[in-house]
Length: 109
Picture (cartoon, rainbow, N blue to C red):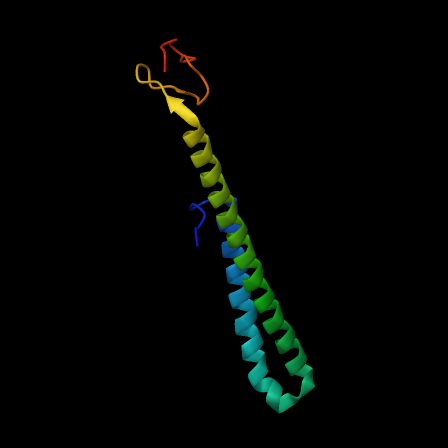
């Protein structure tokens, strides 16, 4: 999986989801132990915290997956753009494949 650069909004959002998920899972499991002795009064909130933690982990996964998909699409678009163009042997600028003369310097391609 392609990870976002450090300091980006996507990386920050994924980090927040991860930290909240760890916190929910920790407190959910922590309350589950005394919940067996007390009864449903603590088991239901602990199960709700565990479910919330799992949902946050899934949300983090989809945020990172969507970012990776955008990066792959951008790479494919750049590759397609580069393959359609012809480089001028004199000035090095990229020209459309159907061009007969360079748009920059006017040399024949």
